[in-house]
Amino acid sequence: MFKFEEICELIQLVGSSGVASVEVDHAGSRVRIEGRPQVLSAPMATPAASPTVVVSELQPAPGAVPEPASSVVPDDEENLHVISSPIVGTFYRAPNPDAEPYSKVGDYVEQGQTLCIVEAMKLMNEIECDVRGTIVKVVPENAQAVEYGEQLFVIRSS
Image (cartoon, rainbow, N blue to C red; front, top):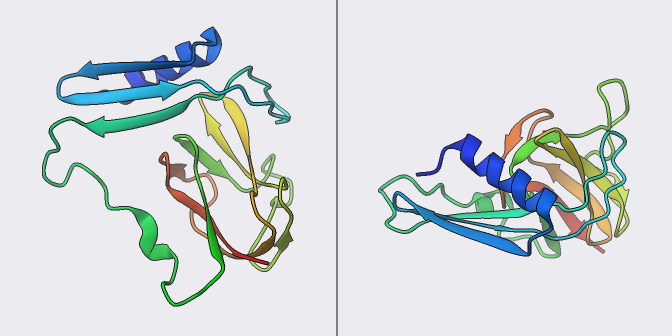
């Protein structure tokens, strides 16, 4: 299994080198990091690339793979859209501790509107909405660690 520091180091290398992707097998686990150019307008940093990390077990151990958080979205409701974290990091609802949150439950949001920041390795990655609609749930707490693919927002699309 990869150590968190090893994965962070690989993310930093891919992000700074401009390589398309890297895949490494080690001790029964496989990690693939795909670099994708992305323009970020975060106030603290503007990296050239924001890598995507995919970690998978080659031989899954019982209980090692977390259950997907799909239970957050009720099955009986239509037009619900989930915004998931594209990276591992820390979820922040506002650009700084003294500022108002980018968005909150009940807000109508437009496609392309910034919803939050996920900080990874001191880089502030703005997460944008990819649909129009009303926020019905903010899943993580402010300053909570989030995983790749973890649900951040549930939006009723319009």
